[in-house]
Image (tube, rainbow, N blue to C red):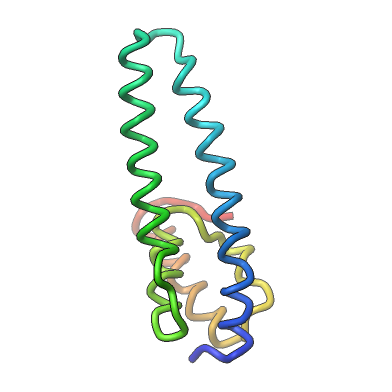
Length: 115
């Protein structure tokens, strides 16, 4: 079960997670815009498509989070690569253990290691 301290930590870290995620995505977008084997049109439309997916992920993971939905939003953040194992430091032990299980499940079943 989450504590008040877990909620406060999540609230404080959400903008940091967003900025880190966007920094990574913006690097990808820049690379897409200069892909050497694509036409200008392909570069443009591929980048627009990726940006739209990123915008949807941001809305899905960050819009409207509250104490009661925090855990759902965190699961979503894991799925979209916004939340990492290392981000769980500072959460209560029980809360952190539950989310470490989610990361372990993903690694076992999706072969997607998390940092």
